[in-house]
Length: 389
Image 1 (cartoon, rainbow, N blue to C red):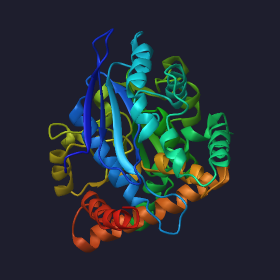
Image 2: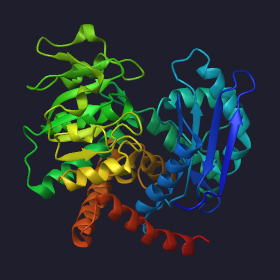
Image 3: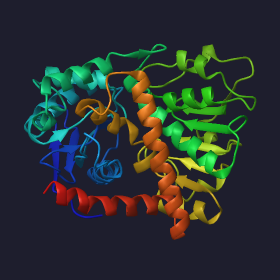
C-alpha cells in the first residue's frame, strides 16, 4: 500500500480520546471517505480504509458519467459511540477537521455513526456541510444540493433511502454471484453479522429476492432460525445501533452466543459490522460458500488465504459496499434524480456490471476477486490521473 498524502492524529482536549484523518489520494483536489467511531480505532486502520476508498472511487469510474471519481480518504475516532461523551467528542473532532472538510475532504456516516448524527454534529461544529469541498466541482451547485437534500428526505417503507442503497448494492453483489454460479435464490441461506444500516438493508433486499435469512448477530449475540427469520420483524425491533429487542423474537427463533454466527449452516455469510471479524483462528468454523464483505476490512488477509484454499469465495469490501458512496455522487453530480426507483435501478445495474466484471477477471487471471478488483482499480487510476491531473 503506498504512503498516503496526509496522515494526522488529533487528541480531544477534554477527554483525551484520539481521532485520525488520512488522505490517501486527491482527484481534482478533493477526496471522499466516511467517518467511523469505535473503541480501539487506530490510524493504521484508517489508512487502510482510506486506500480502500481510493480503490472504490476508481472502480466506479465511467468516462461517460457526470460523476467523476474523487480521491480516497477516511476519518476515525477512538471512542465507543454509545459513550455519553461520544457526541461531544465528535463535534470537537469536526471542529478541528473543519479546514480539511472545507477544502478537500468530503465525509459522511460510517461504522458507529448515522448520517443524521454526523450532520447534526457538523452543524454544531460550524460546517455548512460535510461534503462542501466538492461544491466547487459542480456545474449547478444550487440544483445539485437540492437534489441530494431531496434524496435524503425520501422514505421507503419506513426506512430512509440513504439507509437502503448500500444494502441494495450488497444484495445485488450476492445475487450476481449466485446467478454466475447457477444457484437459485429461493432457499439459499444467508447469515449476517450486523443489522445496522448496511446489514439491515442487505437483509431486506435478500429476503424480498427469496433468499432465506437464517441468522443475524448483534452486540447481544446471535439470533437464528433454520427455517428462516422474519426480517421485517427484526428490522422493526432494532434500535439505532442495530441491536434487536429480544422480547420481539418469533416463537421458533433461537438465541445463541455472540460468535455463533461464524458456524451457522449457511450458503452466504455477510459480515456487515466490525473490521477484522474473521481471522485465521476462527475461519475454519465457517460453512458458507461465499463471504460477502458488507463491512470494511472484516476478513484478515491470512484468513482469506486459508478460506480460498478450501474453496470459499470472498467478495471484497472495495466492491461490495461501494454503492453508498457512489449513490451520493451519482445524485449530487446528476447521473440520477432524487428518486428511489432511479437510485435502486442505477445501483443494481452498476453493481451487477462491476461484480460480473470482477468475477470474470478473477476467473480469467486465476486469482481471487480481491486481487481482480485491485487490478481493475489499478488500470483505472492512471486513466483518471491523465484526464484530471
